[in-house]
Length: 323
Image (tube, rainbow, N blue to C red; front, top):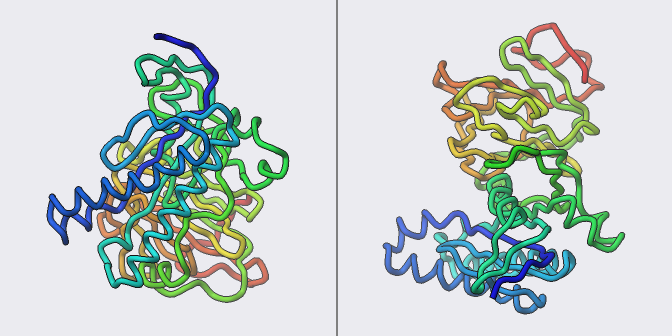
């Protein structure tokens, strides 16, 4: 039977499973991924939702209210975090890389034979591509259905172009950032930034030299003309990466298919984010869709600024533009 109803649609995607297949083999890794997805899907029923289907390393669900959908998204993240913490205690390194991305949209959907179709389904499915590790993204329609106190937990990422849709979507992210412990961040992404909190971020690509203060966050780097920092290169995704202010530091998150690479200083180690995140400190370069060592790749130089300093760090030039 076909029915048209207003629904909150949720997509969740488990990432970081590549290491499982490399270390455990296809059969065991596939069983572990299936088990993990099954565990987090329990949050759907706990929150009064309907599990539409599982999608290999992800799932799709629908809820009557935005509140139920957001509650389920939070529970999923909590469940996966407990799984990762348990793997750490059991010294199971292959599981430590698992992260969950969740996206929710709301609107009219067509319910047919246990499945859902419609614009809200398409938006949620595409929006998952813009989520970083451990993030929960929602549309303005989902935000409108939340209680006032819950709305305060979400921060606007402005309007984002999603694949297959002409009109951009106003997207919000739940505060708190990726669910990575301090130890994880230090292990994966090198030393932490200096203890004095920064005041701004400088980005340079060719002659596009801009300074952003904290109030200008988030910064979306991408090929789209609607990106905060537009880089007109075919190797750059429309929304390729995002820089957020996380309360005391700047965090870079890869949103692309081709990857984002970071090198601190003139000759530091190159970090491959691949849908991951890292804290930006000092100065260095960001490779969008290619390694910073590849001169043909679009390379953005960055500098974390402390406006109390008399001069920005070298090797940046003397010109400066403020947003």
